[in-house]
Length: 138
Image 1 (cartoon, rainbow, N blue to C red):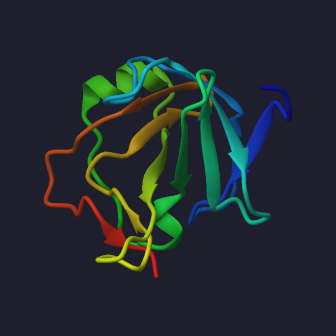
Image 2: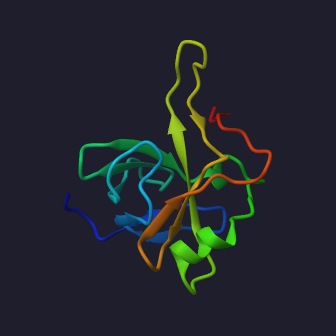
């Protein structure tokens, strides 16, 4: 897994530089491994592939571009584990592809991946808020 050392992630406040190699402080639920590469799949910094060293691949998006009111409260324990002293995390939402019963791809807003751009650490956390697990992207 080689490539750029950072990627630009588009956010409502402007692009953020994020390390392309991320260490999950805990394995993603149901998946092995903690080392991932974040690869941009478009030129605007919206859609990414999160690729594990073991072949796992998830699609993730910058949720604030599609859901401008998405401003969840991130638990302090998640912020501390991922950001340390850095107070400004980046959020990525896992994308679920369209299916026969849901023809439009959806984003998981309830369990974002919290990323510390300055630490290269990430953690998927389930929020204690009334947010959709499958919010339509289109």
